[in-house]
Length: 115
Length: 114
Image (cartoon, rainbow over all chains, first blue to last red; front, top):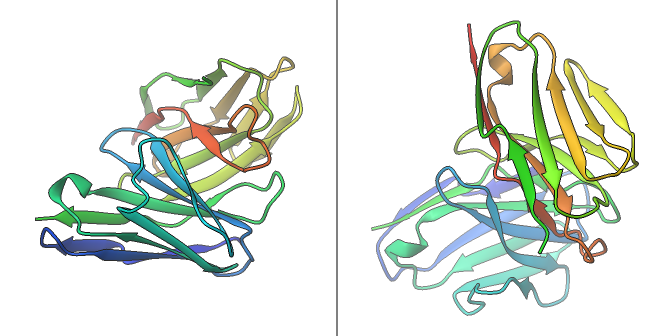
């Protein structure tokens, strides 16, 4: 159990385009989902914490108007990169957890390339 | 702020050899998670440790959390090419255990030569 699906796996688009990434927990209800960004050969950088039915909590330095997060249900969270620019190119990963001390389970990531 | 330091940063071993990866925290750990990542992919959960002195094993991988709860080790016995990847330790951020937020070490890249 504990499968997290992330879609799409890769996106290539022009500067100025908005891109939506979906994160779904397939076989469990996730009280909390997390969005990370990972730069080449670096560790994960937490962007925001998403709880179902409430506003996402963004980490310091992350623009909430740039990275829109919607957590519509206990199994779905979306990250929309608005008006993406080349500097937004990166590997984005989501995770979901049931709650308590349960581990986070991760999606396979989305590689975003903005031309 | 809390930091997780992993050592070594990278490791190349011959197939069949044992190896150990360490994760040291600047503050007391309220849980420690080990994950494995292949480049360009998501993280696979390996093990979770919570109590000081706790040890868990799965197949050829053993993880331990020291009694003082500031260091964890991941030991692989008789390594195989399938063990290759990036190993990351993650821990609840000090004072934020209820949020579920984790900080991660910088990762240890393991290569196993056939």
